[in-house]
Amino acid sequence: MVDSQDSDQQLVDRVKQGDKKAYDVLVIKYQHRILGLVGGYVSDFQEVQDVTQEAFIKAYRALDKFRGDSSFYTWLYRIAVNTAKNHLVSKGRRLPESDIDVHDADFLETATTLRVVDTPERNLYCDEIEQVIHDVIQRLPDELRTAVMLREFDGLSYEEIADVMDCPVGTVRSRIFRAREAIDREIRPLLGQGG
Amino acid sequence: MSEKDPQISARERLKESLSVSLDGHSNDLELRRVLDGISKDDELRSLAGRYQLIGDAVRGEVNQFSNVDISKGVMAAIEQGDVDTTLNQKFSDSPRSSVNGSNGNSKSSNVIEGLWVSLGKVAMAASVAVAIVVGVRNSNPPADVQLMAVNEPVTLTQPVQLAHVGQNDYGASGIRAGYNSKLHDSITPEQLAYAQSLADRATRERFHAYALQHAELSAMGNGQSILSFARLTSFDSQ
Image (cartoon, rainbow over all chains, first blue to last red; front, top):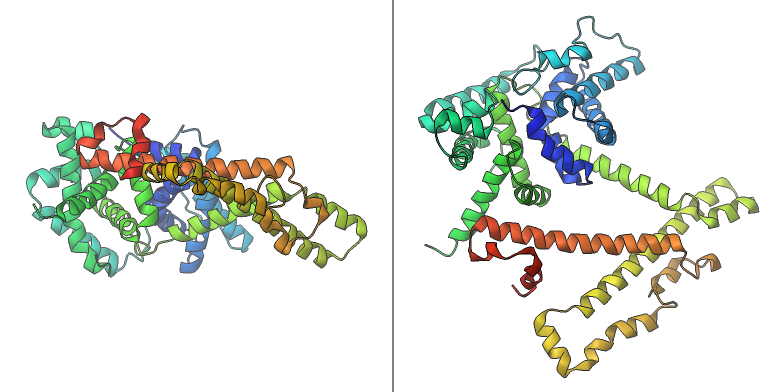
């Protein structure tokens, strides 16, 4: 099974070689999960963004120390939790009583990701986005739906998906791309993004 | 097939490469092409965010921050931090600032003076780098220009003229405009090393552009994809 450790290694390696553009992709990949995580500690919407930004900058500056013993996301998760806690302490606020211990982060990791802390503010917008995406996935041709679900939900590598679907890896990458494109066409208007 | 088809399919291929890169299954050239595209193309950047959102939705991880994008702010802060760090490293032990310190000038005037010194050094390094790049470009023109040069030797004298304009062998004449310290009439080894690093970076970027072009042609699957890197300079004429 592929995990985020494998899928991020290319990008992490490039950042270590000095390619900042690769870090941009890592930020795009994980910003929403980290924002959700920090949102479990900090209640103010703007502060959440500031603390998350600080966490990403700290992670960038410390990336040389990242040895790859855990996944990049697990490592980033720990930095974000510590940054959020430090922020609360600096503001003289109490740390939350129920907390995901940093040392438990590895055990909580599922196929590809850590779950963000649930918040009661999962609003209509989130529900609508999720609903639309699930609806589009249900309408996709079988081969596209299976490929994208095996990748996104089960976290299988392209090679494993090729084995399961009995097709070449090139077909897998094409099917996953076509599935994403089909979904993207539906969600673009909802997000107010043209193109 | 219409004339626009290759462009459309090139765009589609880039988007497919983005999809593959987010999954960590791209090869090195493909990843370079995607990273280059994301840095220049806001739509491709937004698409990366939407592909990620699709994955989050499948896993039930969409949250109230899913329409927030802090990535540009993070990258801007990192860029700013790098600039600050570089300036501090390059100019922290400036001989001019130690002279000022011994003269007992006020703190604010030292700061302003330091800024001018820094700006002057940056201008010097930039002009040296420009002179080197111009020199390299003039000494290595495209094939058609080389042919012209055989008949018109005047064009070959340009680098020589450039050297005469400056006050030293490095063509660093631009320094004097806002910078009048005698301490900087000559270029120190550190400044030369810094200018060399700028020139090296320009060379690397040029090679990177060739590599990207090669990757582009490879992705398009036309006959030129079999060209080896040893013949990359032939792309100049395309």
